[in-house]
Length: 257
Image 1 (cartoon, rainbow, N blue to C red):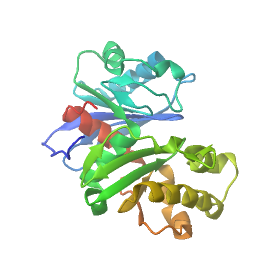
Image 2: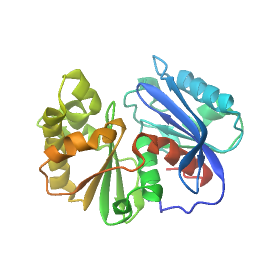
Image 3: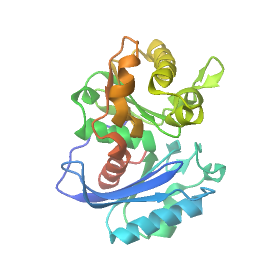
Image 4: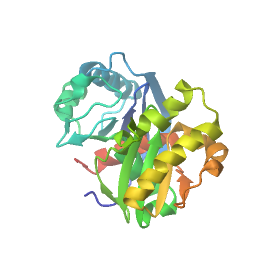
């Protein structure tokens, strides 16, 4: 269980590794805002550990940053070891991510954590008030569906609701942003699938609210009105930059799930 964190007057660098892109930026931990340039590069294919780590190192070097670095990965991270590999190369499974990134980034403070957990931590610190109250499920819709559970702002790490089976199909296969593109769905048709997924999460976990992030949260006005579940569904305030902010927070505060 990870408790909410206070923010000293400092910066840290966050990197968010996704299935299609890797984003990085220097973050002001007091405000959750980016400082200077945001770096975005394509995720190398295949997304092997060394290829991704080299890309992360290039982003950090291009930024000229030599302080703490946090990296958010689409993987369950247990004691800094990747135990799953969603939307990246299977070679990540069993990789000691701290050792890997130290080889590429040198002996600087590092933190590695799940990407949805990172985004959720950022939303709790800098996002909507509801993220800090009650039992909240934070979801990111992108290449897959990431999840993070919070109880009054404290994180229960490494949940994987995107892989829950719904009528024999993984939730993210049914209702991720990638599924919307893959199946050529408009917002209303896609929202119907999201509704099905959220209804199952609601039945199993009875959260006080869902908070949804990822790039498609920018278009929340086009699909949230089509949902019919009882639980409030709120767009994340930090939107698609939350993973970078949360990774930087983890680096500054030595979060090691």
